[in-house]
Image (cartoon, rainbow, N blue to C red; front, side):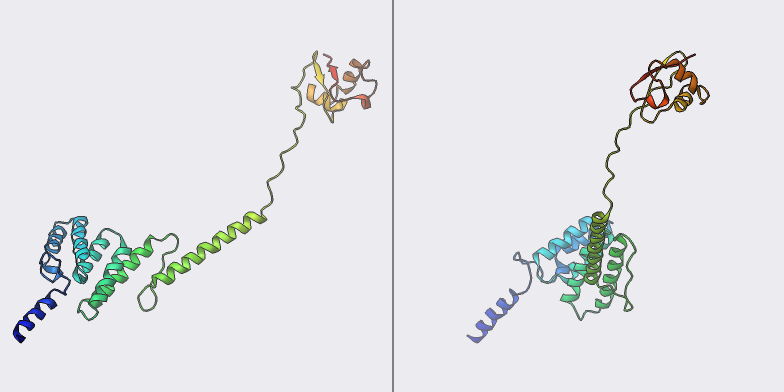
Length: 230
């Protein structure tokens, strides 16, 4: 009776590992998908290799070696953040492994790779050679919030856009001798002479030609049409 009980207990314990229900070996490195991933890896196809390793991870709770290989594939694909996650999963599952120190170094490599992708000045590892990503991301978020605040303050204090300029009367095209000229605001005989003849010497001629309309220079009014003498 006791032997039968022990046999049943052994079977129950065997069923408590992380093996897939189809009876595949308990070690993830013996999983067919893991071996297929290694084949793709040797063929230089990291994407298909990654798919195989992720399938093992999805089907097993403690697929430490698959996490390690998935992290390597993500690094090869220049995708450091998921690489960091899978490396840390390996360290969590196998803290006492002989490879743990190497994997920690791979984490630092992935962190540096991630930092190079950030805009602006790349962030360097600290004195211990590691990078606290959470702290760095918080620092970046604070810097981003500060820049937003500065921009908002600048926008608030910026002088308002200047009011549209009041349309000025359009100066009529220069009139030549024997033509007419329409007086605009600010005109006087000398200024009109400059506009018409290019000099102010003909101011009196203009006044004499328009004596019937303008008895004196003070009588010039915007809108008046003057005769320009030859």
